[in-house]
Image (cartoon, rainbow, N blue to C red):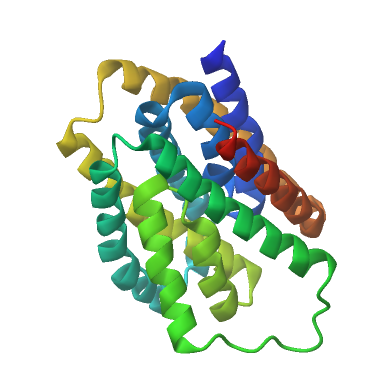
Length: 245
């Protein structure tokens, strides 16, 4: 029953991923940790993040901003490897890791809700100071190494740099290909993958692609703001759930 709910979680959250280019793993992670545990949730969702990045890149690669792609990777890859090392060190402290992720998710959800409902944008937004911009990239890398869900922190940087939604979505998805690919290699080397886990991954892939296809269709035909509101509300409940584990 837990795995059926896990696949349902993947399906629903990756419809959002198909629409926005991010948030699928972050939305899926809290409930997935409760359903199947960190040993299954982290590697499987990492593999799905890699697959979803390739899915979006194949149809949108001409929009990738190579300058911002290289800049993000140079900062995030070392930070991500640091996050992965920290996860290994804290392997026996899962409750601590849940609380850390819960705090990050709640902070991002509250920030998104405030910006969506209470702050009106007048004119062109001011660019982030370099310290905040690169700081958000480094923190995104650490969080991605820990939980495979540094997307919202990366959004803070990319939304400041890429105003065109096609370039934003394509560049973001390409970054996931590199980062999740590196994480997959480190997980294989560390012995995290087993035949049972591979079976779970292969079962989840058709669920992912169906969800991404639906999300991509909605991305072209429906109001994106509505789905961002839903995303932030779901983030709020997901973050709260981690403190109740």
